[in-house]
Image (cartoon, rainbow, N blue to C red; front, side):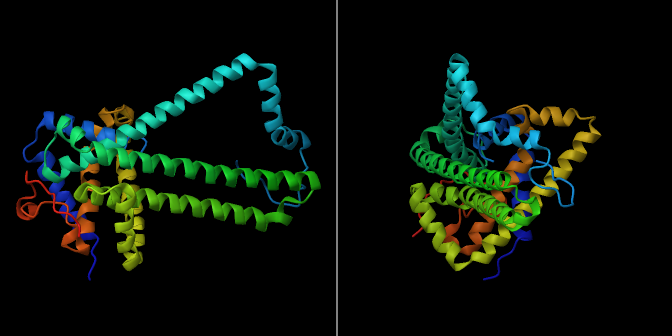
Amino acid sequence: MAIQYINPLSRAFERMKIILFRPFDLGKWFALGFTAFLASLMNSPGGAGGGGNYNIKDKDFEWDAFFRLPSGIMEWISAHPLWAALIIAGIFIALVIVVLLIWLSSRGMFMFLDNVVHNRSLIEKPWREFKTRGDSLFLWRLAFMIITFLVFSGTTITAFLLAYKNYLEGVNLFSNLLSILWIAFIGFLLLFVAFYIWLFLDNFVVPIMYKTGFTANKSWLKFLELLEKHPMHFILYGLYIICLYIVVVICVVVAGLLTCCCGFILISIPYIGSVLMLPVSVTFRALSLEYLEQFGDEYRIFPVAADDAGVSADENVNPIV
């Protein structure tokens, strides 16, 4: 099986031009941009000192203040219970908002995908149609984010305790460099794994859910069967996507500078930024589908009639068997 990378990108780019520019419809841009905005909500997982043989207890005041931070926070909470209660309430409200955004974006991911697949800009119909799948995706993403937070928190606490142990023992900072590097490596590895899980979920598991109507867990099992057969193809796909993101960032920076930073301001505005970046969003959404269908007709998401014209309004309900 010859898996290509450039050809799927070329086909995705052609689909984007058909969807957004043939013909150009400003109303369609704003409607489709709204679903892209919903889909993107909540969807994205100290300086070094100089050399020498400095002891970790050098500059006692700074290190002491740093390691006393947890106890200092507890003392401040005890001394200011009202402010502490307000802060806790604010954190709780923020968590509720985060959960709400995850729920909205989970439904929005299917809405945007459906509009790209069928070259349309509907909002109400896909919002109702993908309720069950959106809720399943929401629960999976929420559980994943909680687990990710707990894992990274545990890694951070472990690193802090190791540094505190060295501080109490007066150990030279570089004598325990191996342990510090090991923790840093684990943190980087966890970040790398979290990125790939997010990438596979958005690029492949969601399309499988979209086509089959499976739950998130069942769709993951279906994708993992494919991943087990072609692990390197999907690892390389992740690296390929990273490279494409870098190119996009460079282009955005150049465009922002050429517009005297006005472009940066517009892109940073919620929803407006999604509309302006719609060519990128549509291309990346189509790219994942074009790449996935290389593994067999059972993974085809775009309607067959779309091969020549690039567009279709036919329903795509054939399940993966």
